[in-house]
Structures are given as C-alpha cells and as structure tokens.
Image (cartoon, rainbow over all chains, first blue to last red; front, side, top):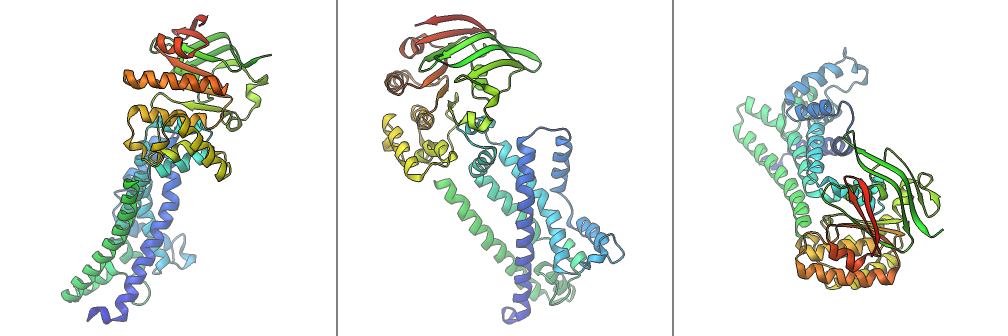
Length: 218
Length: 220
C-alpha cells in the first residue's frame, strides 16, 4: 500500500539524490585532501589529522546546529536563502561524510609500502601518475571509504531534520519521514520506510562491494 | 669522454649525519658496476641518489656530459630504470606490471605491447603474462621487476640487490640470464650486492663502500 503512494517515491528519490551528491562532493574533497595528508609531511599535519579523525565522529545533530545557525536568515550566510532546502541538507551531509572519506583515504594510502611511491617515480612516473597509480593500488580500501561516507549520510537524521525542516515535497527524506511517522504513531509506515531505507543502503553497498571484489579477483 | 656518470664531492646526510661521502666516481658507458659493502655502508643511498630519489647535501654530478641539475627531474628519471630491493609490483597482471613504465611515457599501445612481450620473453616469463602479481613466487616477481626496468631501454639501470632473498637455484638461473641479457643490451648498469659471486659473474668493475666512503675500486 505504502509503495503505491507517490510521496514515498519522491522521498526515496530525494534521499538518494541528496546523499549521493553529498557523498560525491565528499569524495572530491576527501580523496585529494586524504592523499595530501598521507603522502606529505608539513607543519600542522598532525593537527589536521587529529581534526579529520575527530570529524569522523562528529554528531550529525551538532553539524545540523552549526549549519542551521550559519544558514539561518539572520546568520552569516542567511542571504543565500538555503535554510530548509535540499542544498542545506547536502551542505550538512558533506560536513559529516567528508572527514570520513578523508580519514579513511589517508589510512588506506598510509597502509601501502612507502617505497612503492619511490619505485613508481623510479619508473618515470610524474607525480600525478604516481598518485593515480597508488589510488588504483588502494582501490579496495578507497571503495570502503566511499561506502562508509555514503553510509554515514544516508542513515543520519539529526542534521537533515534541523537544516531541512522535513517539509513535504521539498526536504522530506526517508530518515526524517520515519521520525514523522513514528511521532504520529504510524508504526507500520515507519517500519515500511525503514525497510525501504535498508534496501537502498543494501543495494548501493552491494553494487560497490561487487566492484570492490572484482578488484580482489584480478 | 666515455663516462655516462661523473660524481665529484658527493655528500649525503640522513638524520643530520653523513651517510655517503664520495670524492670522485666515474661510471663508463656500457659498464656493469657492482657496489659492494656491508649493511648500512651506503649502497642503497648511492642508488637512490643516482635515481634522483634522494637529494644530496652537496656534490657535482654530470650525466652524459650534461650538468645533472640542468636536466628536469621527470626527464632524468625517464632516462633510468630502477629495480628496488623488494620487487614492489603493483596488484595487477604481470603484463600490466611490465608495461607500467612504458605507459607512464605515453608510448603508443603497439609499442607498449611489443616491448612488453619482448621483455617477458627475454626474462623467460611470457607464460605468466596474465597472472596476478600477487600469485608469483619470489623469483618470478624479481624477473617481472627486471623486465619492467629493461623494457624502458634506460641509459642507466639501477638494481638494488637484485638477487636478495632468492633460493640458490633461482639465484643461479637469474644470474646466468641477467649476464646474457646485459651482454646483449649494452646498458650502463649499477647494482648493489653482498655477494662476491654476483660480482664475479656479472660485473666489469666493483667498488666497495664502507661507512659511506669508497673503500676499493677494482676491475674484475
């Protein structure tokens, strides 16, 4: 019954779009930044690593509070009119998942033999070629970083609720819809939406795991 | 002038202390030079300096009659071939590993395939071309690492203990094959070793390092 409701599909699509885009942006930030932290030694690196590792455990509700205060009409970025839009949810989710992708990228690249970089340079690799080669070499761990980044945002509710406002047809995503249905006492709907969320998470992780394990077989 | 490399007043520091000091060292074109010495004597450091992966504190180096510093890093590294002590293969097929350096140079696919196949054949590992590097024995992995460097047709080949951690049979077979290959390609080669047998079988000349300083310089 629930799955015949067009609202459910709208919510589902918005969830996938928002969390998928947030994960993609996190990858664009986390992959180069994690690589920088893994391959270079510079003053302040330990501090940055500590910040990233702390960021991996950021409570979504705290992120939601900070983003809400920033995007609030009277806040520093209030003029952008982003509060209670999908854009606001994406910003909050990027703040949650970028440290996860960054931290796991750093760990994945540091786990490789450091002499491999020298060997690649000794074979005539440019710095960019060397970095691409070690990304390919660490692809299994990097895919795990991507999965962890996606998992951290598709399942969060605090930030989405605070900066999105759970507005029907605009910012309602699966997690906030589950909260709403539970508050209304509609447990059957909550359970159905929960199962849908689990199915989506499972399908996306199944696809990424399949790609990852193809790499193992090679 | 028949020298490929001329080193003057080379000094390399690590952790604030000198680990390699060479007043003068020439390496002739086509020569196979063995660098012997105990652990920590500076053999690998010399190879890393020659590969431009370690910056000396001071020293003047000429490469093919050119001031070393005048050649950009990437251009210089594309004139050399390096095989480090462990084979350090990528988690890909044997063919892809041997083709790695050629692909870095953006050579046409036909050239990459042709040269990769040629060196797989010459190192006796063409039957392994599709096998993942993770499934190779130590001896096979070493041959792949050597093929990967030879395929680049370098001006200077640097081999860091190419026979270390191999069993006697693999070592002897590889020595024979490498001697045949080196006799045929005329590539200036510098290899580090602990073994007198390696020196006798392969080298035209041997230098011995001790405490980072040149101790002996012998023609074999």
